[in-house]
Image (cartoon, rainbow, N blue to C red; front, side):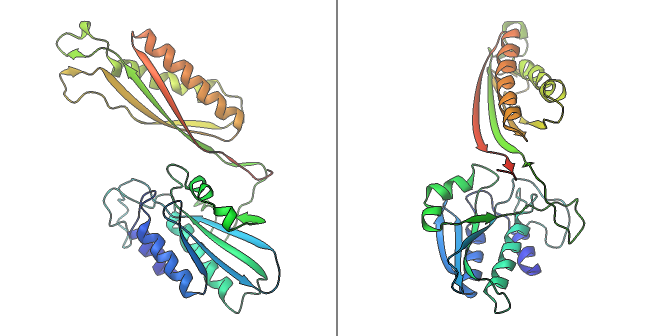
Length: 290
């Protein structure tokens, strides 16, 4: 399993590009006697196995995709793909589920029932779970319960962490387009600079988390980029800001989105510009009591 994990880490694939990863997963599952189904959510894989006479069915789930990050760790098994890295540990998740698959299929495991092993693509991007569900995941593979995990580097080796209540944050992507009036840098007075408005908006957005949420209602927003013009002496007409917005509670999630809309509109207008806010709701938070 160590060699599998090192191979996956050295050969990361981004969301919906997990072709080699899913091929490896399907090959191993087939080798161990699982019935394998591919193509759910484009690159998803499901391995099914029944043992004993129990009608009960469970699901075990892991994600497979990497992130668009350049790896600089220098490890012997570091990424060989430029600009791609398993920085969130999905190579480990995939390997853990493969290890479970091998054990469940072995004579040593006294499992009684049916297990569906769900290898999910695109957790980091557009919500590969929804894609698999829309492709009929639970119609084909109904489960009474589903179990999953996420690595936590802060925990001691060999320890498992459990938590009641809100456990993992929701994730949304917000795109803000600020439109001003472009022109030559020699005459900024004839323009409305969207970069200046965008910079002010970046500072204003910090106040949402720092000052406007209730204590204990964790939330965060990260600015990804603010590209504008293509020449240093040209003031662009527009600039685009992308945010990753996360919250532990639904009410905080709604507050963050509401205030982003309000601040984008107010800040852009105060600089003579306009704004358009597009929200892509991705993943809801995980509540262990739900």
